[in-house]
Structure formats: C-alpha cells, structure tokens
Length: 88
Image (spheres, rainbow, N blue to C red):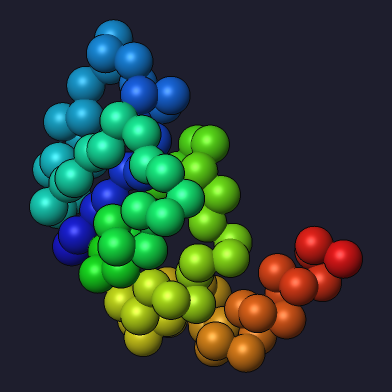
C-alpha cells in the first residue's frame, strides 16, 4: 500500500517516528507540499495524509483514490458535488 504524507513537517517536526506508518506500506513523507504539487504527489497513493494541505479540489484528479473507492464509495461526480456544496 502506498502512503503519502503531504505536509510531514507540520504533523511531525522531527520529534516523532514514522515507523508505525512505514510498517503499513510504502511511505513517502514530504515536509511541505505546494498547491500545484498536490496532484502529482498524491496521484497514485492509496492513503493520503494531510494536516494543512487542502486536497478537496484535487481529489477527483487522484485516480488511485477514486478507482479503489477509498473515498467512501464516492464516484467522481459525487466527490465534486460534495465539495462544491461545502464551498458554497
């Protein structure tokens, strides 16, 4: 399982260990992620963890998450409708 942490520095500035998550799969930790880097970094992950990075507008572009139905059985249209309703 591929696990990506988009803003590891805010979740763990160095005083904690990632070993528990490493035991669950292939872990990639990015200290910080800019908005234009989010899709590329999360695209093929099965689990995406974030603290500050806003991912609501890019979820539909992350095919692995959508195809594996990791988003509570939401298809692309339902995800768009969900986030559009939250942002209006």
